[in-house]
Image (cartoon, rainbow, N blue to C red):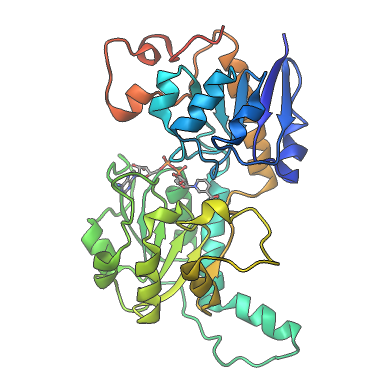
Length: 351
Ligand code: NAD
């Protein structure tokens, strides 16, 4: 039996990798539209849907997917903060994800942002294209010996720590669940804020991490601190960041994610006026580099995403356990006696 799967927010690089793995009972219908409550009806006749980080999978979207007969929502990403997964659970739509596809891709990119901001490669590039070979204003600092504070020491945070150690930096870290048996030097958040020359964010976006970088925390930071965010935009309160940059408390920021990115990132607005003053100001600053959620974008990561997403969908339509399923009850700790994921390894039957 062939399963039709609606594939939302398709970009050419997605199609390139997914077309290589869609066989043996899975046929994708590619749509360029982002998934939201209006576009969900495109999934008519599909038993599954594939979505990405900036799709708006709220209650209404989940309901519409369910009306169209969708039984499985396969996220081609790790994060799932954009899904009402309680509603998905109520509608018996299994939510699957790709928990890890290339943590080093994101960690390497975080270092690329740090090196760019610190050594002003973005400015030098523009100058030499204009045959301006001067060096004034391009002075950086040695990373060796500087303290980097890593918030979140999961897969990506740990890769980033290893990279920083290669640069002979002093690494301190904060995590609500410190890694056991690791040689990571964990400190409390206050100490991390106070001591770090550089802060790199690698925790997920949750109620606890939302706006963890805000006016109060910025007041505690070292003068001239560089902030790198490759995690999720809303971990930083953008207006507070802007203020910290204007007041020169923050010496630079490398942002691969932005709080209000969902209607902008991944699209071309080069011929339009952007109606987001905070973003416009951030982009205009010489010590800020904003990129469009591209930290994951390597061939290896895209291949892993395609492979795992298809494996996830296949597993759903077979009887197997679903290792990559997000169970509403397990995730929230609201584990009822009826939690099938705990008992059977999956929330709902794929049949
Ligand atoms: P992970 O689950 O392996 O690690 C996350 C870590 O954060 C865990 O150790 C967890 O204990 C910790 N954490 C949770 N709540 C915390 C809190 N309140 N304070 C401090 N630490 C906390 O995840 P990962 O694979 O390392 O990915 C991290 C994040 O990177 C993802 O959640 C996602 O938002 C982001 N990401 C971005 C891109 C990109 O292209 N920019 C790509 C992949 C992932």
